[in-house]
Length: 183
Image (cartoon, rainbow, N blue to C red; front, side, top):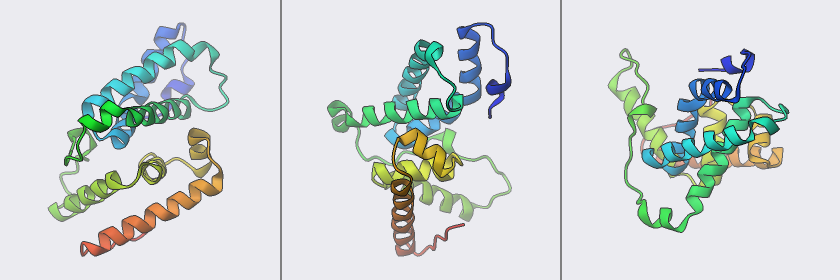
């Protein structure tokens, strides 16, 4: 996945949208899922993201990359979904392990897979303000500056949230007998 769409020449909004969906659709779905913890809702959010993208392509000023722009839309729509009263009452804190989040590495052993799943589960249990910075920084490999642009927050706020999230994860995982070290 990547920024292939950034370098392509497109002749219509439809072609551009198709390229953006191909390049970023799965990645954006993962981000939405990590916010809402529901695969079906994540798919709905991504549909809304690309509908919004299509309607605003003409006004995109290219002050950021398409990827950053789409992640910002996804984060905002995911947060909106979390705010809905009906969503809060319909979705329980059930254990959810979507197949699209698992990494297919046949050579990785069972213990490593269990640790990854435990870490993902612990990230999903973080408060949204801490979860989002962990997702964007570690899972999406975005820089602090890109996260500032996406979340529209102060750089020190992002750094503080990253620190607090790491500390919460470290304490939680150490309590479970595991150690989690920052890399």
